[in-house]
Amino acid sequence: AQSVTQLGSHVSVSEGALVLLRCNYSSSVPPYLFWYVQYPNQGLQLLLKYTSAATLVKGINGFEAEFKKSETSFHLTKPSAHMSDAAEYFCAVTPGTASKLTFGTGTRLQVTL
Amino acid sequence: DAMVIQNPRYQVTQFGKPVTLSCSQTLNHNVMYWYQQKSSQAPKLLFHYYDKDFNNEADTPDNFQSRRPNTSFCFLDIRSPGLGDAAMYLCATSRDLGESETQYFGPGTRLLVL
Image 1 (cartoon, rainbow over the protein chains, first blue to last red):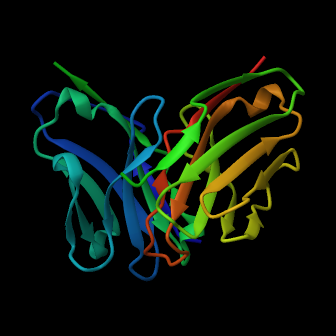
Image 2 (cartoon, each protein chain N blue to C red):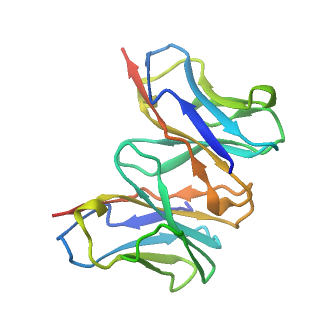
Image 3 (spheres, helix red, strand yellow):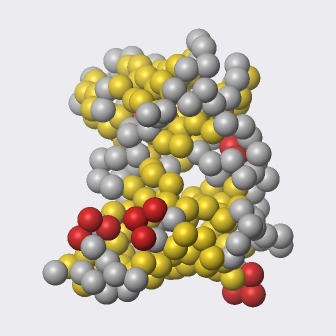
């Protein structure tokens, strides 16, 4: 079954520093990949999704992710972290049907002054 | 704005007392989902409806039921809540079931069981 692995359950960066959240997928064919963000006591909000149209995907709030087939990765980046980026981030994949959206274990991003 | 709405945002119930959580959507999507999310964990799918067709996940306890009376509304019924059912419950929708479809989530209802 297709799955995603998020490396690092907690990531801490300084405000203004680069944000890099890692996600690797296991799939023999290019999957549909998603990044969601969850703020405390909120639902999940879609940041961006990969649908094979372009390997570099731009999302909301200045985030982007690059699909690298050779590395089976879909890492999320943002050039300059802001305090408001502190949240839980989930990478997810849909293995064949939207009803089987499979999440990674999540990465909690902390942004410090 | 089109959206997914969940009420209430916080629900307190007593051990064993039935509780119903509600979800509505203005997106006119065919599919509605219910997830359970415990602290510091990823959401876990309980079941979904494709139109009126109900699909239960194999490991969803019988204690959890759902109703979808029309396209816009979907309810989660917990017949006899236990302490282990305290969690955030998330409703989501998608236009269809294709693998490229995006799921749109509501703000969630946090359930506390006393």
